[in-house]
Length: 353
Image 1 (cartoon, rainbow, N blue to C red):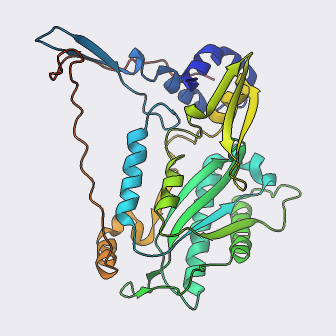
Image 2 (cartoon, helix red, strand yellow; image 1 turned 180 degrees about the vertical axis):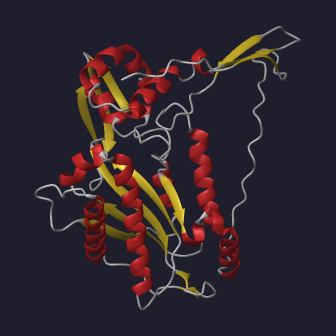
Image 3 (cartoon, helix red, strand yellow; image 1 turned 90 degrees about the vertical axis):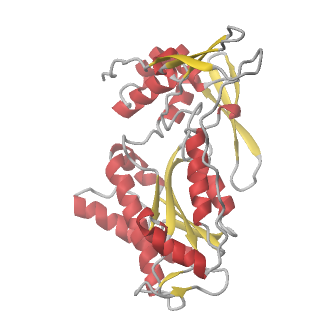
């Protein structure tokens, strides 16, 4: 299998020469982490089997959220937490998309733009839920930021998974909207556009020329919600591409496959290796920025409220076993091996730009 680390090790210098002017410190740190993943640079542990004298050594993962070779456990843990919060209701996926004319601005002001996108979309959903005569409630929802299209182009948008129902303004009674319709996408887009442009003007930013008068927001019914969370979990950790989707690497070019959104057909895209690496690394988020966030009665500070709702709605909360520390068995005799040495990760030099 072709790995991202392999491509980065072979083409690091060429890549920096070509894209170094666009790169930020977070991109250099991501490259350093991915190249070091599962090598001695990330630390090492050695095991010994006393009966048969077998020796084994293992290298740690880098733990960087862009690395496709690790973070599998974090993905599963996040998905398990969301499953434990599911209510026996219909769920909706509400997607807010920024227009293409704003992408250059977003790229150069990422931390402010992504935070504002979360704030504006949260306010938009709260406003619609409050003003809806059939609902008039405070919602709970989960938002996940995506910055990529399936072709890996820069395409910032925000997904919210919203259960059909909420608490009244006194937070004592449960209110639910009848039917399988939540909000009108076109009306959501109008309010979303007005709020985001208002935030830009308040901060002193100029609106790019030819910014469209109509933006895009969709509100789609997604059943009982679990399938939508599984979809979002794919890109929450481990980067924007699975290494199994890198199908070819020859003559300085990389081919990867992706599933087209509407037709669901699998297509391929071929790019020079440095261009491919940039397609992946441009989606590294600013350091410390959280891609996924919970709001309302799904927030971590509202555990008691959620528990009351689960009792009220007779929700079946799945139980998940705590993952025990993995035991390393000897490949020869099958007995448990003992750890004999542990080496800390090496202190790698900080990238300079």
